Each structure stands twice: as C-alpha cells, then as structure tokens.
Image (cartoon, rainbow, N blue to C red; front, side, top):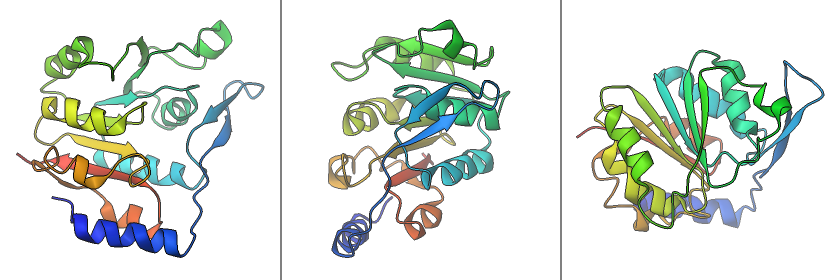
Length: 202
C-alpha cells in the first residue's frame, strides 16, 4: 500500500520548493505532421508514461479521459499494436482527419463515467478479466474513478492516475488501494511528477 504519510511530506516538499510541473503540451502527428493535438501532460511526463507502459507490457490500455487525443496518439504511435480503449463524455476527434491518425487497435467510447457507475465500462472491465490491463484515470474526477472502477481490475493489472496530490487526496482513495502496491514509484517520485501507478496484488 502507498505510504500516505511519506506521500504527504513529499507533496509539501514539492510545494515548499516551488517545483513547477508543465501541465500541457502539443503533439505533432508523425503520420500527418500538419495535425497537432493538445496533451494535458507536460513533456516531462511523456517518457515516464511510455517507460511505465513498456515495462508492464499490457494487452489492453484503458484511458479514462480522451480530451483531444494527444496522449492517446503518443502511446499509439509508440505501441501501434497495443489495443487502446479511450473514454470521454465528449467526442473531440469527430473529424475524419483526426480519426485517420489511429488504426483498428484504437477505439473511442463516448461515455459519462463520473455522474454514476458506468455499466458499459464495468461490463468492459469484467469481460476482459483475463486480459492484462492498464487502466489510466485522467477524466473529470480521478478520485471517483479510482474508487469506482479499481475493484473491477484483476490481480496483476496496473492502474494509474494523473494529478496526484492536485486533484486526488491520497486519503480519499486509501481504502480502494488496499489491494494494490505502488508500481514504478521511484521513477515518478524522483522526477517530482504528479502521477502515480499501482499494481493489483490481491
């Protein structure tokens, strides 16, 4: 389980030293260089996210919070045969030019995930019980997403979230993380980045 006392001390240290983490960047497609998508992660996050995915080597990545599809595209271009299902309540990739950036391994779902437990997503997680999954929570309410959907992951699956300490208070998800242990925690803490990942162990 995450050491919440040490997490809070680390958070205070970041604030005290006024460490600023870039919040957004823009990504230019390698396939269609004229198309640029916004990413709600600073450039410093991208290598660590890709390294975390590479080490875990999931069969299915489930992204909660598509936004403009920038992070989805970065991951897709790095791992072109990784199955990705990305969820958001708004379709910001409706143009054929943007949809052409992705191949058959990427599926976008327009679903509301935070006003109530989403049956489509729950059924999707349950139906992929035997699949090695990587769930990334970066939608409108990460605390709700962790507390609601983590229970449907299988032992050996990885879950992550963005904006740890900023939009997620560790104490609010402590009970949901009792069956998880930190995954690649040293990588993220040493970089002073506000994301966290856990692997389900029971």
